[in-house]
Length: 336
Image (cartoon, rainbow, N blue to C red; front, side, top):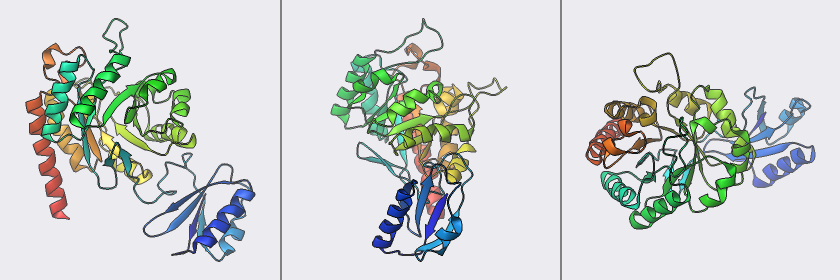
């Protein structure tokens, strides 16, 4: 349920109403937007006297919300949320590109890639220290050493780092990580999501291989309900009957998520397609459809990559893609 207040309410009136609602046992979420102030009531609101609320001087209207996700719902928070990741803003018109190798392999590799993606215009560095792999015999990442290598690259380039967590027990190792990624396989690992509610860091939440948009938003709700409002949603392709690409990139999810939620939405075309030659057109399409950012895998030697080399761009190819992305965004803003 949301309570829409009249324009420019006095702060004392807002505080009094919130206190009154809290006394009645309702959790509240106050959102002050450019056009209106909204108080969201979270929990069982079946006993709320809607007519009484509407009669209050400060209240403009009261609406019941049927969607099961409340904190992530745009009706609770009409303005776009802007997430600050190590000084880099994402969402609300702030577009960013995250780039780097699928997995951290060595200091030399990560440092070289970090320098080249920064020179091309990337603003965050990604790299897998812990790698979930389908086969138990595949390279699983350098783990703690991988995080140390990413932090060294951050110190040298200034790029905030993004890396994936697989287990809540690893959370102490992520103290200096700027953006913690939850991979597709863990999107519904609810115990992990609850733990990330107290992480005190932004979370990049990837859509699961076979999950609906509502299920993605409910996973975000787990983290937000546990105390962490800083969530970035990521469309990375879903599994369908199609076999021409690794997954099917659901670009329609970007405007749908923007309509349903205030959270930033980025796209990962590398994992979606699984082919380096498809990264350019899908990156351009992601920018054109209104994504708040793009995450691209880049490797200095893709044929010899220990993980997902087929979908990785070279540094030179990444620079070309960045030029195309910037051109598309420049054209979009020129039209406005």
